[in-house]
Structures are given as C-alpha cells and as structure tokens.
Length: 145
Image 1: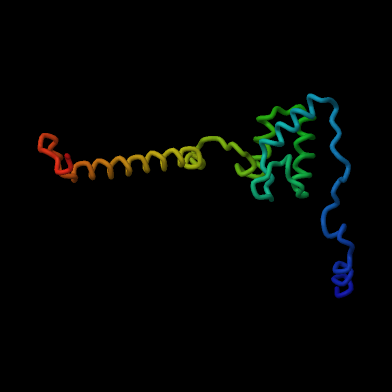
Image 2: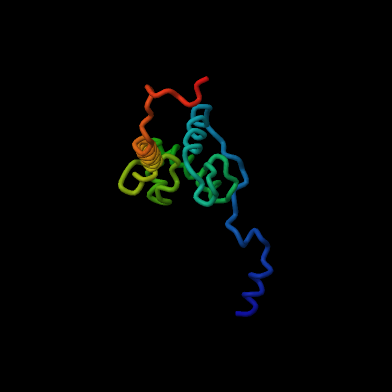
C-alpha cells in the first residue's frame, strides 16, 4: 500500500491529468470551421471565469471543443448541440440562456432596476415641487434694479 502511494506521488505529471490530445482540430471545409467557431463562441467554458469555449485554454474547454466537433459531424443541429451541453453542464454553458422561471431575473432584472430608479427619482422630484413655496411672479422682485 505504501509503495503504491509513493509510486503515485512520484508519477510524472502526465499521469496525474488525463492525457490531452495535442493535435489541433482538423476541419473538413471552411463552412464546418466557420460553424464550429460560431458555435463555440456562443458557449461558455464551464471552468473559466467568463471565457467562451473558443477562447479558453483549459483542458475541459479542449475536451468540450472536441465534443462539439464530434456532435457536428454526427449531423446534429446547433440547437441540438447546445441542448446536449446544457443537459450535461447546465444552463451556465450558454452565454444567452433561454427565458424561463430560472432565468427571468437575469433577463428582466436590469430593466426592473432601471424602472425602479426612475420611479424613485420621479417621486423625489414631485415631492420637492409640492413642498417648495409657490412663487408669486406678480410681486416686484427684490433684486430688480
């Protein structure tokens, strides 16, 4: 048991992480490459902070790009590929999640905050206008020369 633990501790780093395929992706034609880049730019790396699948250098992003290309070659549509990745990784994988009960605040929250702020400003201005003394324009001004 101790020998096995020592062997794992001194194992080369390549054994500690799943072996990555260093070969770049090969596309059959320019249309496939364009579709791939468009699709991966709309998908989020599940490990990185706000990086698209196309921009990330994380190992999982490499794996996900290979998965996307494999799904494309199986003849799946973009919507089917996105749905497959959502089932596997959740809505987080989409930069533009669908509007539903889980994401309505994400879509409409900024507008609601803007409307709430406008209502607060309107209320403050209206109260100040009512509280200000009425100005008598017919009376002679003290500042007239």
